[in-house]
Image (cartoon, rainbow, N blue to C red; front, side):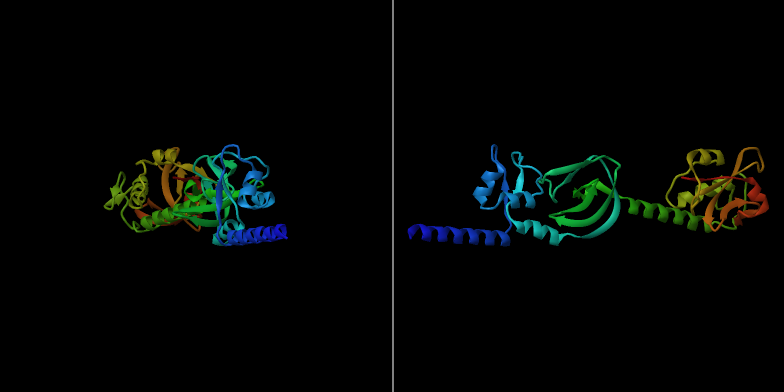
Length: 275
């Protein structure tokens, strides 16, 4: 009878402990020599749940590893995560962890420059963590270790649009060979001035601007358009592409917008390049 009473008391105590663990999540720091069986016994949880809550694929543990010893933290972590869609690149070689937090197990490594797709984000203290998938492994990476490719594209687009806006403000200014101010521009002086007004330093001459830029197959507004064999052989004229097969440049008597369908400029077109 006494044994039965003790058993019931122990069972009640265990039920109470497990109910409490579902309310207040707890953790356990692995000590040297400890096994999953030891932690299971001391925390009154099953080895199966320990593996599940900590994404463990084997029974191996290492000293100072922090394990979740209740389901609450896992569920809470999931509920605190919010949707986050975007493409990012790793700033350096980074670790992917089983859960948000630097004390959690490393499940994968990502090399610098690798592109990752983020599906969720979660704030942990002052840090934000992103959920990613690397090959077949899912995990969490500290957001400050990644840079958004979407933001990079957006910044580039904004800067290019600004160049076009600055260049359009310079229309109707007289053409002066060697001119670099609003009193008068030549073609490369016009380009240099427009880019400077938008916050980017560009070299002075048509040839140096050609060397400074990279060739592109499909031009976007803000790209440079180069022409050859105008007043001299080789690369001899430059303008700024503004879209719709048009460019703005210092040519003729003044700075102006011209169509690339113009028979003269179409015959002299050499390439599109990007700074």
